[in-house]
Length: 387
Image 1 (cartoon, rainbow, N blue to C red):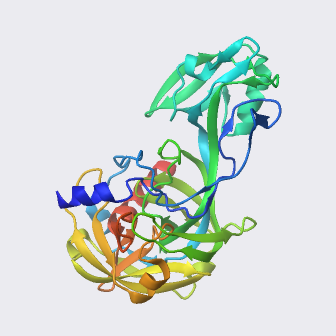
Image 2 (cartoon, rainbow, N blue to C red):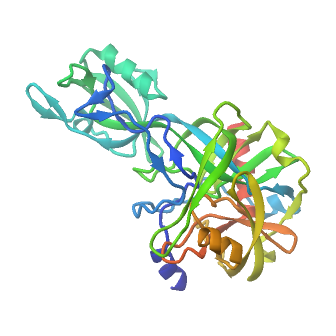
């Protein structure tokens, strides 16, 4: 009951630990000619990691492996921030809209059965992964009926929709879609035996549908933290930062409920760093620990925390630890755990035990964490699926 009460108070959104999130191609109403409809233009927007959208629900993890998979594994704990860019596999429907036509208001997307959260993968038999590709398909229809291949709750559906010409004469679907995201997040570990890294401790979820973004491709970029918004009760703080879009440090191959994972190609960030054993669940104890975090520039420092609870293993629940910040420096600078610290590695007794994932909205000095063994096991499963 105590844990349930805490969860009711804390940020229920599956935080995607992407601070100062800049959407690359944010939500746009599907159309073919022009970029403005009814005064709505294509713009960028900011979205924070560990957001406070109460619509977000936990999702049962896609992968699972025996605990023994991570036994004795040595990884390098990191704690540095990186820019993360993600391009979706298909386009995600994040909302439905009415279209004003000469004969009245219509919504082709709603009428054909399209729903928020659907992923459009094909139009008229053509694969679509971007807003531009959807626009091109709509232009080609010239108002004729077109087939849609849609993924909904992991099931494939076939729909047929007839686009309409809006007041600006462009053919429109009446659906808001998203095809990419980008922002700043925290790296948890690097596995020197495989070249694989893990970050965030939870997946990147769409800000409107709270749905795990389907990954087609993505990468990580160098970043720095420019300033911090301090957290207070009722208002989570956040890291603000910038990243270098011209340089890529590695590619992503998985976006899962236990984190985002990829292959590091630029090894400069791990030079001089020491590998550490990954702790098993049975080794993680209530008591003192430290976290590695990057809250200013590109400097990673260690801060003291206390593990106050180690929760029993529950299927589908990635919140395994309750953490409390005890470090006076961190409390002074950030107020505790802030958005953007998700993925910060948690160390205890010379081992990597987990990563910060959530902050309690009512008390920013406390938050949840995921076990490192769970993240490491996820990398193994994700690699197998990606190969």
